Length: 87
Image 1: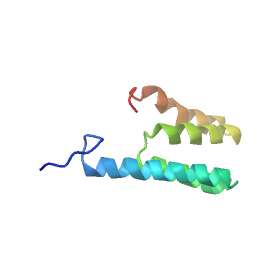
Image 2: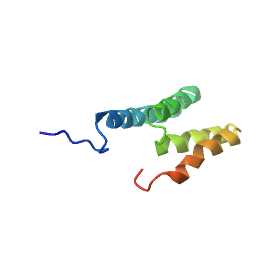
Image 3: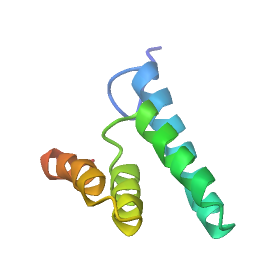
């Protein structure tokens, strides 16, 4: 029997998406603990796994804006405009 993957692109993409979501969840936990550096590191890990992971793009862009790094924040926000509706 053939394996079925939610992403439709096989196990590697599914694993990367799972890792991105796990790192994003870790960023939320870190933020709740007040660990800003850990939160940012987790968001960056998420984007290394899946560079188009919208929750991490939005969150890291927001953090960069809050830190006064508007150009970095804008750079992270821009790819969100190009993502498909089902992302």
